Image 1 (cartoon, rainbow, N blue to C red):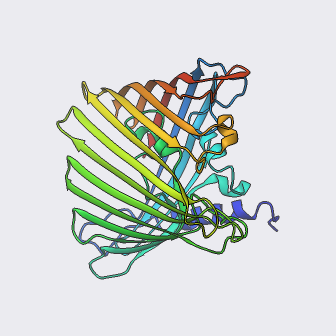
Image 2: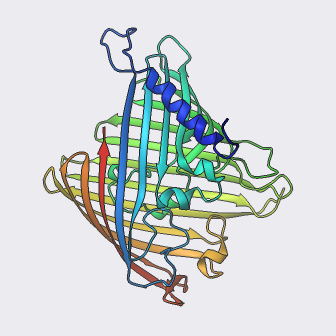
Length: 369
């Protein structure tokens, strides 16, 4: 008999077995392919914060690579995907400091689940899909898998918006260039809804791929992160464009803007916004660099609580520069320097606070396929 404490892990294990059991070929397509594929990812890192915070956590509002002067695993991920022409499913189990930090509000057993979803094609053309479960967020261009991002660390724009959603997603591809999606979810990066909240959240996404060199995206979120008693509505937009000018030079420009009611049923709103610009240069297929400029303003402490920034509003700008060595596409050695600056003393400096923060992060990441 399985104990109540072990029950969630038992079902996760059972789902893995069930998906592996489908390891056969898709005979409905003219070209046979494997139905089930397994992959993995590990990102080990070391970060040194020159402010030498007295806490092991570098900064309270980061969720990636957020440990000082110690070796750690940011993310270790095992993923199994079932991919049929008419149905699909994915489950991904995770561990690492990212899971500890970013899933802090979730129950312990849910912190280990990165993805757990099933989907089905709703029409004969198979360009209309419904997926239900724990899904990767439809917001932003940076994911928790560092090897897929141009910079080693994530921008504040990414760190302070959802990495995952739990709910249902309807995706429609009217053409190869255009993707439209609509979501109903449990809240702003919530697997379990806020206690006392009965209102679902909603999201949309419009992604336009003009060519392999130009990608444009607009994502939205409408919902609340409060209980019914104090419900303040939140409205959010994420925009980004990715432009590849040549095989060596590319640029990503992103912008987040959101607002939230100051009080329930109030006509007054607080707001936050964040622009980011990233430029990458690939010197060779194995050697690349990227520079990032970013700014984040949360005047009303909507996203970053005042207690996390020494009772100040968050106004901060930053510069990052990284160097990447990728001998093969599935393996990367990276080092990055990052400088953040604020007009207020919000960054830990030993046992006190200062207006700037400088840190160097090194990472070795590998993907198993």
